[in-house]
Image 1 (spheres, rainbow, N blue to C red):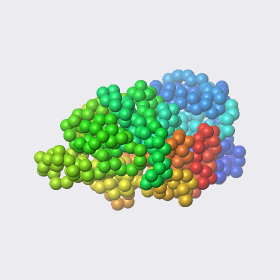
Image 2 (image 1 turned 180 degrees about the horizontal axis):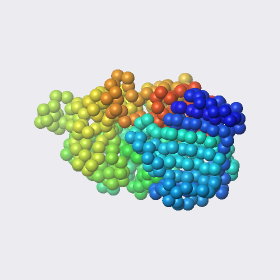
Image 3 (image 1 turned 120 degrees about the vertical axis):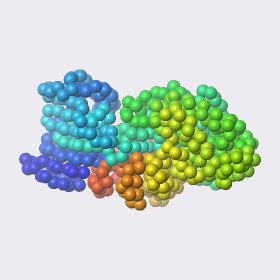
Image 4 (image 1 turned 180 degrees about the vertical axis):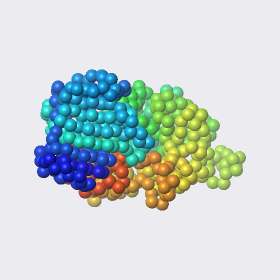
Length: 538
Ligand code: ACM
């Protein structure tokens, strides 16, 4: 980031990487923004937001940003501001103003904005409404972290835009179920970090979480397990307590709307053909003749998978029809990971099908499964995302690959000119422990903050041309060992700060020491929000 500082009447045209909270010697308010903006200059002095400050909307469709800011102010500082509409470009002579407007920036990725604060006003100009919304997030990060009705913010000039188009977080609501209030909170965390995708993992071996009206047993049976593993895989201990829950379609509609108001796209994931034990427990006809199975009570990978039969395809087309009605996202995630082929090897039906299709191995059949579902979704104007196993046996023609078992799947897909979201386990799986030894029960693995921070989603193996297929990055939050929202918060904070900077800040401007200093303010903000977080990096 280019940071210029003006203090004490001396213009210091410095390109420095230390945040101004450290560089400054005066009483100007702290500037500590995460993700770090592309360029920022600070001047001496401050602008004060108080109950008589007015927000002026100088463009259309900017109400959401004003509403968001007012809700934030009300919640954490106990007041909100008047909002007035004015003509675009109209000079607002009034002082004590926050002016939201548009300005052509022309950056190819949505979300660019400029931000200027002087003694009289704050001006946020977005390339579009999303840019204005991100300018509001920057304004929020300039606010002091102590509640008051007189909020001094620094005088800054910022030009900012995202590095990647796809900046995502996944929450697994299958292993543990999180109520709608927490799902909304999680989406809000995404928005406030200038991220824009919520990958909602809705179906699993251990629970089917989305109401499908045509198949009520998916939730009356599939959303509930009789018992849950205690401790790590193989412990042999269970709690013998019924556990579950699901989201009604009305609840989902409300969550989609909530996300839209924050410019977050929800990508629903309906797993197939693996991780489908809960669906099969409700509708055993979905498998290739396996006996009735219960909803999973143990974590891991199950041999029970969906059968590539006309019944299953018809069933999942009906499921996806309801899913598409609920989720406007262009992309639907169809899973594709961890699908052992043992049942297909042993099934006369699948073996006969393979012969008919001229296939010699079951991976080709998985590709057939995924391609069949892809064709259906393509016909309805949607595209699929799948975990990197969808490369095995041949990649479906229009699929986007989520590379999780490392970067290899993403590299292979980019070389095939398929879009890629990078989410490799060893860099960006936030279910791994933040400390060594682990300070609480986790799935395993060790992923300290610095390793997340230093991750670069564009592998050096790719040419510049191939690198363009890397659409972005996503952190995954698998919840085998996150039973409560507070544990999710503890596992994502502060590593989500690092993820946001990986996703947003230009590679050349990243600096871990500088990030750690800015994190100190973020810790104070966590306290303001009342969220739990890991303190080992404090
Ligand atoms: C995955 O972690 N099984 C995608």
